Image 1 (cartoon, rainbow, N blue to C red):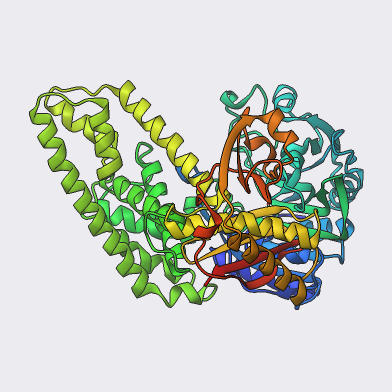
Image 2: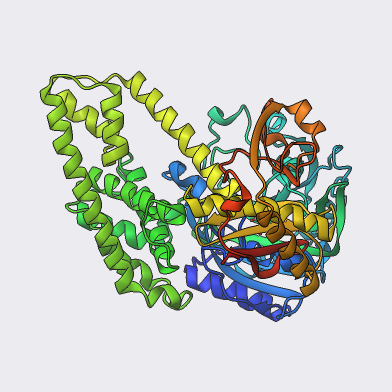
Length: 631
Ligand code: SER
C-alpha cells in the first residue's frame, strides 16, 4: 500500500478521532475546565484521565463504559523548558477510555488502525514500547501487548522484532538493531500514574503498565549529546511520542499493588503531534493553530521565525499566550497566588520575549483573535469570552510595563551610586520583576558589573523559601496565619481525632486546606458518614473546645516521636527532628497528637463559636471530604 499522507487541520483530526471512537460505541464527553473542580491534589488539569479518576476507581459513569474526548490540558512544570520544537504548556489530549469494558486486545488495534487507516500514517514510521516487568511491585512483563503489536505490524506486512531495552541508560548504549520495532522499558518509561513510578504513588492512587507509540522522523540525525545511540525514548528529537495506552488495572494499597475492581484503558494522544506527523514536520509550532500566531508575530516584529537566534522567542510567546488565553477563559486571572500566579508568569515572560523581538507594547492582546478562530467550534466557552480575555491581557501588560518603569527608576538611582550589588539586582528582580539580564545590560552601559554569584545565592534563597511556602500552602493546607485560620487549624486536629474515635483508626488525612472562613479535611474512609456519626464527631470537638485544653508543641528525635504514637501522614517528609503538637495537659494523656509544624492557638478555648460540619462528600473512591465551620 502506498501511504500518501494528506495534511489535515487540527479541527479535522480532532473530529475524526471523536467520530472513529463513536463508531466503536464510545460516548463523546466534553472537555473539563483547566482548573479541576473536585480535586485538591493538583492545580491544573494536565491529562484527560484526571477528571475521570472516580470512574477509573469503580464509580459508574453516567455516559457508560466507553468514553472519548479531546481535553484541554496545561502542565505548569514545563514553563521554563518551552522553546524547543515539540513542548508546549497547553495542549489538547485526545483520549479514549474503557471503564471495565474492553482491554489490550481491542485497544491496541483501535489506536493502530486510527493512525494507519484514518490518518494514513505509514506503519514503517511507527515504533512502540511496552512494560518490561518490575521486581519491586511483582508486576510481570507485558508479553500480551508484545504479541498484539507483532500481529498488528504483520497485518501490514512488517516483521516487528521485540527487545528488552531495560532502561534509558542501557538503551542509549545499545541502540536499535535492524528490524526491531517493539521495545520493553522499565517503570520510569512504561508505567503511568498521576504521580509517576509505582513507589511515588500515594495510597489509593490508580496506575498501570502502558504502551507508547512513537513516530520516527527519519530526516533528523541523532545527536550524541543525548547518548551514544538513538532509541524511541531518546530526547534528540528523531522519535516523537504521539500516544500512550495505559492499562490501568492496579491501585496502590498499604499492602502493595492490588487489582482494581475493573480493568481500565486510559489512552492519551497529543492532538497537535498527530497534526504535525500528518505534515511530516517535527515542529509543533508550524501546525495551523500555532502558525497563525507565529505569522502575526512576524508581522508585528518584522522578524523572521526561521532566524534561529529568535525561533525560541517566537515559540515562547506563542505558547504562553495560548495557555493564558485558555486559562483566563476558564476563569483564572493573573494574580500573585495559586493558579493566577502562573498566568501572570506566562504573560510577563511572553512580554519580555516580545521585547526581545522588538514588538512595541508587546502586542500580546492582538494575538488572541487569530488564535481563537481555530478553536471556536471545539471550545465555544473560551471563544465566547474573547473580549474579556483581550481586556485582561491588556491590563496585565499595562501593570507589568508600569512595574518595569518603576524598576528602571530604582535601577538608575542605584547606578548613580556607582555600584550594584547582587542583593540590589535581586531586589530589582523580586520587587520590580526586572530580569537580571536587563539589569546587567544597563549596568554594563555605565561600565558597572554585577556580582552574579551573590545574585544567584539570593535567588536560591528565594526559591527555597517559595518552594517551602508552596509546600506549606498546597500540602500543609494553611493558606495564611490569621487568627481565624489558626483556630481552624487546631479545629482540624480535633476533628481528625474525633473522626478516628467515631469511625475507627483507618481514618487518615489525605489533604487539608484552611482559610479564615472554614476548614477542609480530606481523609481516607470508604463510605458516606451517617447523620448520627456526624453528630457524634461534632459533639466530641465541641466538648474539647469547652474543656479549654492547652495546645502544646514539643520537638524531639524521630525515634522518640514515633514512640509517642503521634499521628503522621506524610512519612518521609519529616527530617531527623520532629515537631509534635498535642492537645491536652501532657503528651501521655493528650486527646490529639500530630506531627505538625504549626502554627496553632494556645488553648482550645480560643476557638470561637460552635463547631459544625457543613458538608461531607466523596472526593474520589475511598476519600471523603469534610468542610466545617465555627459559628
Ligand atoms: N494518562 C495518560 C497520559 O497522560 C494517558 O492518557 O499519558
